Amino acid sequence: MKVKDLLKILDEIAAFNMAEQWDNVGLLVGEKNRAVTGILVALDPTDEVMDEALELGADCIITHHPLIFQPLKAIYTDEPLGRLLRRALENEISVIGCHTNLDQAGGGVNDILAESLGLQNCRPLVEATGGAGAGLGFGRVGRFADPLSPEAFIGYLCDFFKLPALRVAGRLPDEITRVAVCGGSGSDLAEAAFAGGAQVYVTGEVKHSTARWAEASGFCIIDAGHFATENPVVESLAEMLQEIFTEKDFAVPVAASATQQNPFVYHQPQS
Image 1 (cartoon, rainbow, N blue to C red):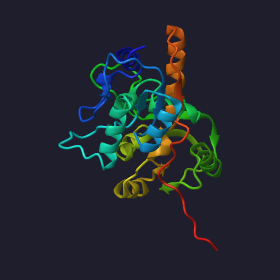
Image 2 (cartoon, rainbow, N blue to C red):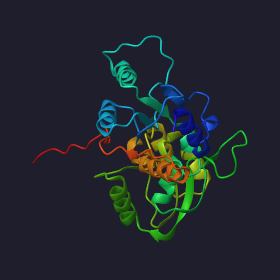
Image 3 (cartoon, rainbow, N blue to C red):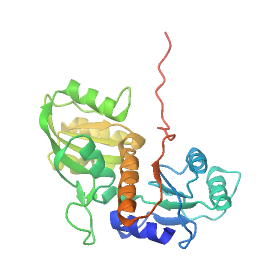
């Protein structure tokens, strides 16, 4: 399999033309005609992911957040981005980004988040534009088969996201059935979640002004963080690619990053 074959498969999973205009997706480092012998999937392009790829012998890294996001005016190899670019080039590792196209796709970031949480009958909070097809777009809103109490819901989310605590703005409903989610930075979709009939909205990077709006509107928003709400797609994408490779008889191993962790940790005062 060559990089161009992998790009075609990824385009079928999450079409690159679904990405927002400000985004940067697709092949960011490498050559389309280079062979692919091993793939590592991760959320962020970091030194630890590069180390993991080299240890595994993977010559292609697929990340959700793109390695090159803004146009580069200079590359300083003693700084984080320049160092990663140098390591990728020196070790002939291809780097591919699947960002807002994977956010909106069926089976992408938001579908996996909603399904993993057990939400049913889901639909996008904001439909994809440009004739991308029904059921695609940012965020999801759906229902639990059985309602949860506030205490059970918070405990369930903490277990799922592997977090010791959650930031909650607004009052939790007495009984929770209809929930909206958006992986990553979803503060701007809070009003869409409210208008879509959700009782609670689970996302990351909630703005202070959005939290105040939720309080005043009688709505509840839970901030579980950017990493925790997006990372479930990493293992899912790796499994999806491996299944497709098996069907196509491509003998290329795919691994989900086992080393990358949430950059935020909780510190509690010692008694």
